[in-house]
Structures are given as C-alpha cells and as structure tokens.
Image 1 (tube, helix red, strand yellow):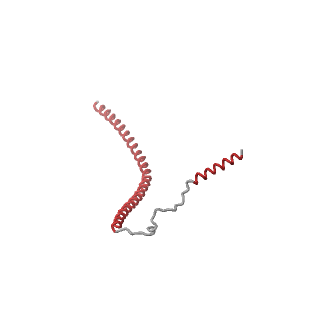
Image 2 (cartoon, one colour):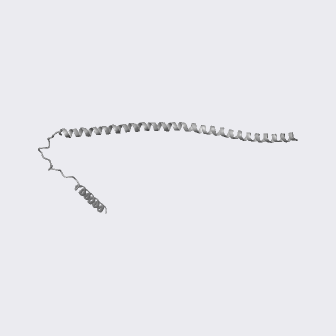
Image 3 (cartoon, one colour):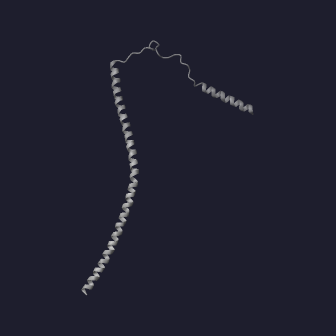
Length: 135
C-alpha cells in the first residue's frame, strides 16, 4: 500500500515537472534586427520636434488643470469638514432655542386661556350689573 502511494506521488511529480517544462521560453538566438543599425540613432527632424513640443504644451496645460482641480477638491473637502463641524455646534443651539420658544409658546397659550376666562367672567359680571341697574 505504501509503495502504491509513493509510486503515485512520483508519477504525479514527474507529470507536473514535465507539464511545466514545456512552457519555459526558449533562448532566442536569431533576432530580427539589422546588426549594423543596432547601435545607431538618428535624431528627429524639426517638424517631428515641433509636433512633440506642441503635444508637450498640451500635456503641460492638462497637468496644470488637473493639479488645480485637485487643489480645489482639497479646499472643498476642508470646507465641507468645517461645515459639518459647524452644524454639529449649531444643532444643540437650535434644540435649545426650540425648547425655549416652545416653553414661551405654552406660557402665551396659558395666558390667552386665562385672559379669555377673565373676559367671560367680566362679561357675565357686566351683564349682571346691567340687569341690576335696569331694575
């Protein structure tokens, strides 16, 4: 039993190494370049250089615009954080004002109810006085 497992392991290992060996790249001996031109370089002509300069100016302008956008984004992020902090400070003040004015409104409504009752009592008293005066 042990020898069967050992044999299977050896066969599996051999297959694995054989499969991976086929994918190794072969050494290139023939390159499709001209050996005389291998170490030579010819600078670009004036029209190619002017086209490169124009393209570089466009890329520089684009880079400047992107950097401005990043700076603006950073300042907006700072402003947004400051706004959130200020709203966190304002919310308790608003809640305090809400409860304060709510209490004032309740007091005014109680005062109104008392004034209405006093007015009704005064009207009844005035009517009683008027009827006694007529009699």
